[in-house]
Length: 86
Image (cartoon, rainbow, N blue to C red; front, side, top):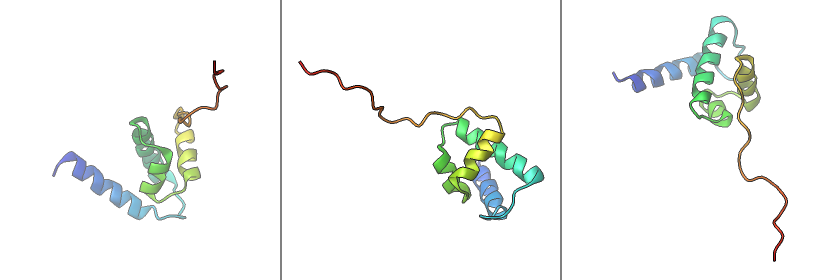
């Protein structure tokens, strides 16, 4: 079994045991926070992580904040002053 397959199987198992709405405490919470932090630091968005884990955006945001992650800016176009047309 390749590493990516093993990781996917582990993620599926963790997601199964952490059903939406169930309380996540103790070592399961620490493991989930570490996994989320690693994926977020690798470039995954909070929304993508929320969808992957079956949790809300707020839950994932809180877990990342609790684990000390520096959250990225929202990105996208900024609404600066328009350049004057000449």
